[in-house]
Length: 450
Image 1 (cartoon, helix red, strand yellow):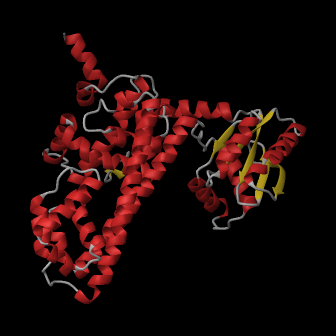
Image 2: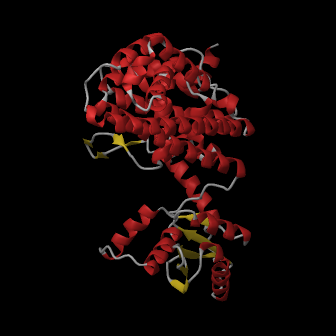
Image 3: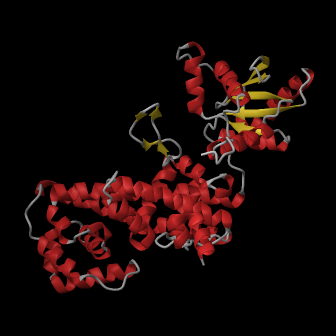
């Protein structure tokens, strides 16, 4: 609503964003559109009507584009422009290289989403033609229309957190893949092993015992059986100690020792499959050790940024979970509003209204998928450890009108985590359950009533 001013909050936010972009794309600057590739860089210099002033192909790597920028600045100056604004698509690592080269020359630098370029390409002449020359002009045209964005500022500490987050995600994917392979192999040759624990892949006892069976005894179940229950327990205790544990679950050990005589499964493949399981268990343990080290480094970066106390003031959100989110967002201060951060994750609702028609509201699904995943993973711990989120989830899934499914309610909680994480970091104030429940206006009304 406009609150009587004739301008809505969305209008104000959009106007502020356009004003920030206009500083980088002033009317006195020509626009340098660059289509980046490996060894061929297409550079065009245009005015704000996308009229091409100069065009040249440079056969070089991204790091050698300094000469191209100097050439573009010279051509713009000849045409009477005060300076240039450099624009490109965020292609791989090359756009970061170009951004640094532009910063070294005090040239404003912006990026254009490849999706917008693709749409503009279709609307250009209703064909799907794609050439480097056309794309460079389209990038410049979209920049002149301010359909671009300010890339994330370069910061050493935040950059390190982003790379550690990428490393963590890679290790998580590896561990999930290893678990799926182990499960598939055991379901084929020895399914009874999976029934010995309620959640076998979360049990240190089960993993240690399977290592003893598959590695120490080479997958020979008869050999392990000949050890006897007492010696088998001793071997598992030694393996757990080696892994940093204290004592095993005797119930799981008894069930696993009993399962050694179970004939279910494709026994002809059992020796080879269990040998493969031994390799996977080693890889799984190695990936777990690397993951623990990476997460320690990520929390160290949070300490360096002096954010650990703030982010963990949100009950149910661990330092690792917050670090994983911030590794995808970068510094939250670069987002003007918390809603902008939620949109960046693709967790903002998409309205469908036209006249009297009211369509079904869905998530945009756009933005950064890895950020959406990190926020989604944070929901599970927050939902159990945060009374505000638990009450919100219960309300959304039990209300009489517009009741949400469990997944929809968890998506709402994920968006709330992002909004409140943005709030505590940008304001420097710890999480307040009253504000999280009623909002800042509710806090002010409570103070006035007192």
